[in-house]
Structure formats: C-alpha cells, structure tokens
Length: 471
Image (cartoon, rainbow, N blue to C red; front, side):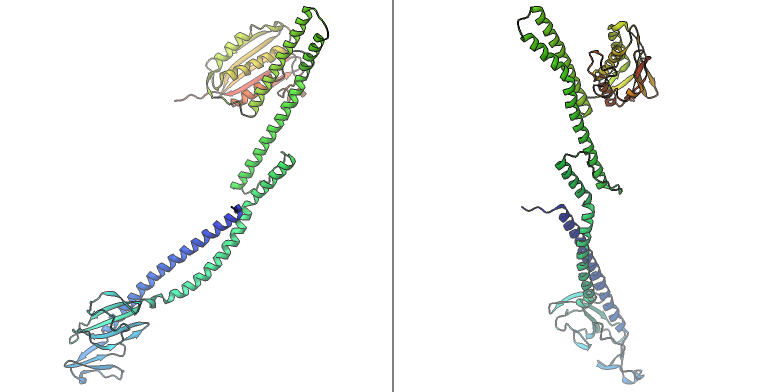
C-alpha cells in the first residue's frame, strides 16, 4: 500500500478541518437564517391580516358611506353594504388576504391555495398547509365590528417567499467555500512545509551522520522555542550522548590495549622463558608467581574499566536507601588504619549522625579508593587525616595526606583514566581509582574537588547532599 508523506497528510487534515469548519458554519448560518426568516414571514403575515381588519366596514345604506373620492370597493352584504377601503392589502410581498363568509364563501381578495386551504377557520392561529407540493402559512382572524361578525379574514403566504433571501446567501457561501478550499490547500501546504522544515533538517543531518559517521554534526535549533525546537534540542542531545558513548568506547578500547599490553607481554615472556628448556622447579614457581601477579593485575584493570564505563554510561544504576555515612566512614577508617603501609598512620574525626541517600557499597568503595590513593602517594611515616562533618545541607568528607602532592598542571587530569602523577612508580594501582570515586560521588548527586601543593600533600573533598528528614 502506498503511504502518504507526513506533509501531504498534514495538508489533507488541515484542509479537511478548515473545509469542515466552513461547511458547519454555513449549515448553522443557513439553519439560523432560515428559522429567523420564517419567523419574520409569519410575523408579517399576522401583521398584514391584523392591519386589514380595520379596512372593512359595514353600512346599511350607501348614503352613510364617506365618499371621499377614494377607490374603495363596495359589496352588497345582507341588509347593507361592505366597504373595502383602498388601503386593504389583498396581495403585498407575497402575502395574500381574502375576505370570507363563515360558510367559506370568498367575498373579496386573493387566495393562492383556493381549494386546498382548511375548511374551518381558527381565530388567531397560524397553521401550515401543503398545496401543489409547497408549504404555505395560513392565518385567520374574525371581524369583530358590528355587522361583520360572520366574516373572516384569511391570510396566506408561501414558505418559499421567506427563503428567497437565502438564495443569495447560498450563492455567496458557495463562492466562499471555494475560496476557503483554495486557502486551505495553499495555507496547509505553507504551514506544513514550514512546520516540518526542522524535521527535514534532522532527517538530512541524520543521513549525513549515518553516511559519514560524523557524530559531531548537529541540526540547527529554531529560536522560536516551540515543540519542534525542543525536538531538535533533544536530537542534538541524543547525538551528543552518542558521541560521548562512542568516544568512551574508543577510549575504553585504547586504554585497555595500552594498560593490558605490559602485563600481557610479561606473561608471554615468562611463558616463553619457562618453555625454552628444562628448568629447576624453583624457577618454574617464580615464573608462575609472575604470571599470577600479572594476571591479577589484568583482572583488576578489566574489572575497574568495566565498572567505570557502566557508571559513565548510566548503566550502573542503584536503589537509593538511607546510609549512615558516619558509621560507614568510622568502620572503614578503623579497618584501613591496620594497613600501616610505609609507616603511615590514619587519623579520623567523624561527626555522628550524618546520613545520605545512596548505596552503601558504592560509597564504601569511593572512600576506600581515596584512602588507598593517599597511602599510595603518601610519604614515609606520614599521616592521613579523614574528616566528616555537616555543612548546611551537605555532608563534607575530606581525605588529606602529607605526601608528594600534585603539580598544578596535573590537577585537571588526575580524574582521567589511567593518569598517574608519577608514571614510573610501580605502586600496584590501576589508575582508575579516582575516576571511579568521582563517578560514584556524582551518581549520588555530589562531586569531588582536590587541593594540593607539591611536596606538602593533597586533600580530596567530597560533598554529598544530606538526606532530608521525612515528617
């Protein structure tokens, strides 16, 4: 089945909606106009008959009549005469009035539906009669003057006489509908093209990105701030995320290749050396120890890289729960104080009752990474100081050492993967501890800052939002 384009469908829907609205307006106007005109026609019928009541008089003799030279009509009636004044409107604007005896005999006037009208008279009542396939309004009035009580005036008018003005309205509306149809199609085309222009731009941009693998390309964003502008912004944000994800993937492969090259080379060298000829058992054990040590290093590197990549991509989600950060920090500091590596002591000062929302295991890893980093770069017989306190609505955790410190030019790089201030050091680290610690802090709504002075040590400060009390 052939599919219509979105632009064509929008034009059709817009045109159909506009035409439907115009048609409904026409129907409503026609219906209301018809009702109003028919009401006016019935009112005119009644007023004409009521006015004619005063134009019929009875006189017993001709001498009693006021002959003022008018062209009045005289009709012999019973013991006298009927005078029909020349102002009597027997036919005016399609309204016909006739004078009848109560027996139904026509005395004067016109009746276009003679032979079809009701046989009986109904004083002051407007009735509808069908004659010759057309509808008529009939209105009767009894004459109340002396000598005239056996006479009736009957007014008749065709319903179509009230609809005559509507023919002009119909012709105008038909022209109007034609003009509306042209405007609807033209306006719909213009509006659809202007409205869909950002989508076409996004489609072309996506095609260029797909064809050239250029993830840096972005679509233009209209300053209008409408839904399509927000769609373009969302599209650009999606492309930014794809670019970051792609760059992270490339960085992961590059970092993995770089960091795993050395332990892989060591393992292969040990294996080749062990297989070169018969060796004493002691040398085989030494070779296996080197292989195991390098294998464990590779395992830590891969594990840390996967953890960091999942956190950076938002795939490592957790359920936040209340965590007593004071108790967690106290317990971890007591455990890590037993390390006593290089004669370094660990002192801690913890404010009780500091609680945050988060994951206890991840927060514990963040703190252990910071303390482990302080041990790794601390000086012989130095000191590590850990403090935890409240600051307004934040928990402030600081891990400070008096070690080698960090050069100013390296402060911006220490949270990058595999960065080491002293790359020649064989410290056993993977170079991923600080990046993982920062990602954990950010995942909990906080961040890590560092202050350092070469030769005097470094201080890493973590700020996390304190859990608000409920109730």
